[in-house]
Structure formats: structure tokens, C-alpha cells
Amino acid sequence: HVHRTRPSARTAGTVWEGLDPWDAGDALAVDLDRLRALWTPPQPPPTVVREQAAGDGSEGRLPANVRQNIEIVQRAAGLRADDVRRALTEDMDAISGEQAVRLNTEILPHVAQAAGALRGYVDRHGVEGLSSAEALVWAVAGVPHGCLRGQLLALRATLPEDVECMKVRTDVAADIPNLLAGSKPLRQLLQGALLVRNVLSQQGHSSFPTSSLAALRYERVRIPSGGGGPMWIEQNIPTSLRLLAEIVADTHTRQERLRFTRLAAVSRCMELESARRLIWSFLDDMRGSRILDAFEMFDSIDRRLLDEDSLREILSSRMHLQHMHDNFRLVQQSVESALPSVPRGTDGGDIFLEQLSTLRSTLSDAVDDYSECYERRLSAARSCCCLFGEVPPSSGPEDVCCLAQRTMLDMQKFACDLREELEVVWSQRASMRMLGDFRQGTAGVRARAWREVDTRLPTLLHTADPDLIRAVRGRMQGHAEAPTARSAAPSAVGKVLGEAEQSDDGPAAAAAVLPVDLLHGGPQGAYRRDERTGRWGRRHDGLDGTMLFDPFAGLRTAL
Image (cartoon, rainbow, N blue to C red; front, top):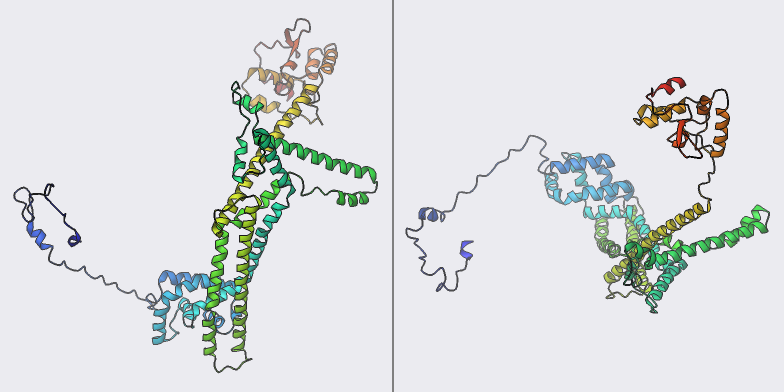
């Protein structure tokens, strides 16, 4: 507002000095009449009068979009006003649990908005003129504490399942510290990490914080000044994580060898299969204690069970249930005051009162169960922090849960990095074994010989390489079942080729015995080679190989 503008404390020596407060002179073109006109109050804006559309007059009581949503829910869930009113006043089993949940989530939020308009209409005209959606809303609004009763109906349907689910999740969360404390593979991994770090650093530490385990993939022994490049460093100075992965791989190999030795010993000692299985069921006690079982354990742990959000969710649910339990007496008093003349033991009042009493007891037990779950979750978070030697900044539940979640995240990240490094170690060792077999001549031995797929015709139709066309045509001059140069041994091929050339057919027989196959057999099956000079001569099919020829001649001959 213009009157709220405060003037400067002084004008002497400023740019404001000498300026007239009321007259600008000829320097400015000021319209004083326009400024004076602003002191006259302006005309109010015209009032927009909306014409009410012709209808039943329900638009003022319930908005159109709300009425449409309520009708959709009413048809989908099968809700009727009479059943809802009966469930709120006489028998809670008048509607199903699913209907009670839909009533709480879809209908009750609109009751407070439309209760006043509906009450005025019902007082003047009665309930006969209400639509189906309005009648459903009025069935809740016309009952004392109707919204609270509807919430109790929904709790009655969902509370047992929610409490049971919370107990199961709490049991899983409370078992996490016991699972970690009794895990032998976890202690083996931590022992390996401790050993590698102490040996490389020549310092006898007894433990490390979990946040430092992520640095294992970057830690190395001090690199000498004359060292090579990154490849030389990677091969000669491995990281701490690589050394730990090699320890894990060697330990796994030893454990599997021990297990196989036990299995072989049992198989040799007993001849009866049933006796072998019975003995092995007692001797196979390494399940759960092998070093690789630590990775499965970390995969099965859900760290969200110990975080701050899960604890806050339990606390919020417990406070909501406590609030409903405290307001329960309002419903019970309204029910007892509405049924003063109904004798005890009749269906009119005793059923609903018994259901209310049972629901109140269920609410009280649920509050206790949620309190117990809260304490057990908090105790599990403290145990996880103490188990890894982590100290929270304070004893507050938020700090404890935050530290427990971060600790579990660090351990799972450590297990993930170690698993990736272990895969690299296994891959490198497999490559070294294959290289050793290749040098010894034991690599490349075929277990079985598969029948060769005939690709001559597709190759001939799609290729533009003249050498490949010449090779395919020369192969198709022979018969289709002839062995290729790869499938036959060189000595056997030479022997058969010599016999074929000495026969009466000459080059044609040789071409039938050894067809040309650049795709599978290589170029050596196409031309002859002098054994003394090493020069290539004419082709086995008798053609020169450098003359112009019809590329489809062999195809026409074969067809």
C-alpha cells in the first residue's frame, strides 16, 4: 500500500535534495487530474448470475464429478444405502470387508463436504428425493459419528492381516543380527579382507569400519618408481580386492574338492544306493558353511527393514490405532444411547455391542503388537550396528536406524564388488587352463561330429565374390554327400585323392571326392600344391581357375 512506504531519514547530500514534493515544473508531463481521480472509489465489478440448469436440483447438494465417482464406486463394489446404514448401526457383517474398505477410501472423504446440504434437504423434503449416490452419502452422514464408524468398519476388515504382516516382517528384521552373527562364510570373508590389508600394510589392525571396504578395489602395494604402464601394474601389482577374490576362489575349490572326496568315499564304501543316500545325508554338512554362501545371505537380506522409514511407518500406524482406540468410547456411547429400550440378549442391540466390544479388544491388542514391533525393530538395528563395531552419533532411533541401514548397504556393496572380481578371477583361470591345454595339444578335441549344413545354393545366389563362386561351383560338380576338406584328415584326403586321379574318370572323380569349400574347408581344397616346390597348380576339378566361365554351370549340372 502506498501509505506504508516510509520516507528516507534525510535528503541533504543525496539525489533527492532540492526536489519539490508537489510540483515537477516543466521538466515532466504530469497529468494531475488522473492522479486525483484515483482517490474516487472505482465501480464494483458486475455480479455474474449463473442460471441453474434444469434438473432435479441435486447439483447444489453434491458436485457432479463427486456424484459420478460415487456412483461408479457404488456399482463396482455393490454398495447400497440400506446395507451401509445397517452395518453402521446394527450388524457390521451387513457388508463385506472389501465393501468396508471401499466405503472408507472412496465415500467417507466426501461426507463432510456434503453433510450440511444433505441434512437441510432431508429436513425439508425427506430422503425420498435423494439420488442413489446422495442416499449412500446420507447413510453415513445421518448416523452419529458416521465417519468414525466407517473407519472402524475398515479397520475391522484389514487390521488382522496388517498386524500379521507387520509381525512377519518384524520377525525377519529381528533375525538379521542372528543371521549375520552366526554366518561362518561372512567371518571368512572379513578374515580374508583383514589378512590382506594387514599383510600389505604391515600393520596389525583388528578391524576396519564397513565404510572402508569399498576402497579394497583401489588399494595396492606401493608402486615402484620404475614401474610400467597400467597394464603392467594390473598384472604385477593386484588390488586388495583381487587378492581377496583369489583367496575366495581357492577356498571354494578346496571346499568343493573336500565334498567330492567325501562323496567318492561313501560311494566306494557302500554298494546299496539307499544306504549311500542315508550316510550322505549326515556327511553332507557343508551346506550353509561354504564361503560362497555369504553372497546368497547378503542377497536375502532386505536392509529396508531396518531403515528409518520402516520405523516411522510402524510408529505412525501405532499412533493412528491409539487415536481410534481413544475415540472408540464416542461410538459406544452413541450406540448405547440410541438403544435404551432394547433388552439385552436381543438381535437388535446385543450383536452390535458385542461386535464393538470385540473390535475394541482387537484395537487394544494391535496397539500393543505395534509397540512390540517398534521395539524389536529398533533393537535389531542396534544389534547390527554393534555387530560391525559401528557407533551411532546418538542413542536416538533415527540415528540408530540410519547407521544400521548404511552399514548393511556397505556390506552388500562389498559383497557385490567381491562377486564381480571373483567372476573375473574365474574367467582368467579358465582362459589359462584353455591356453595350457592348447599348448599340450589336448585342446580342440571334438566330442561329436555334427552333420554339415548345406549352404551351397544360398551362397551361390547371394555372393559377389568370384573366388567363392568358383569354389561353390566346383563343389557342386561332385555329389552332395562328399566329405569336406575340414571333416577329413589330410592324410586320408591325399590317399583318396590319389586313388581317384588314377581311376578312369580322372579329374572328375577327384573333384567328386574332394569338393571345394572355402566357407568350411578353406582354400586348400580348391587347388593342387606341389610338395617339393610348394607352388600351386591346377584345380582338382581340372579347370585352370583363371579363365572366364559360367558361374552357374555347376549349379545346372547338379540340378
